Amino acid sequence: MTRRLLAVSCAVLAIASSCGGTREFSGYVRTPAPSSQGISLPVIGGESLRELVASNGKLLAIYFGYTNCPDICPTTLQDLTVALRRLDDASRVEVAMVTVDPDRDLAVLDGYVKSFIPTAIALGTTDETELAAAAQPFGASYLVESMGTDIEVAHSTSLYVVDDQGTLLLTWPFGVPSSDISADLNDLLDGRRS
Image 1 (cartoon, rainbow, N blue to C red):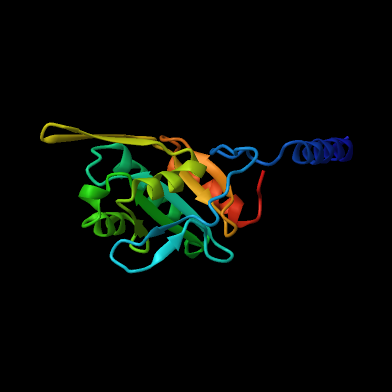
Image 2: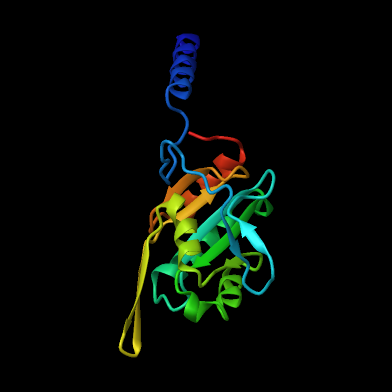
């Protein structure tokens, strides 16, 4: 009786693991996947351009935001910071923040994003066409309006990850827990793509 129960238990476990044992991504996959290959932005605080693709064998997490954001941007960057700490090998994930408010951010974005993730890259341009071209494959949107002496900024709140070919692998909407982001990143680093 014990052997039969053990055999049935093993069979059930084998079926369960072959039928959907893989966890679902917390971020969503766009099909067909857009590409950021060939799109570059100036590195703030440097004199170089950075293509919006990961270095060879790595992933690049990209966020479009601004430093005066009162809640969404710092929360997203903090969640990403915690997610990176949970990774098996965080050195394989690069981070870039692109400012959607360059008039106010070009002087301060580098220090801002590095206060969360010391290895992060700050990207920005005052060329509106260049910025729109960078945002387009991600579906990122933003609007900066002057209201007298005040400046109002609206922007999409997703976090994106691309591979070393510039393929957009996942988009995380705002509010995905850092534990889910790190689980997704570990799966992507292990080669999983769907």
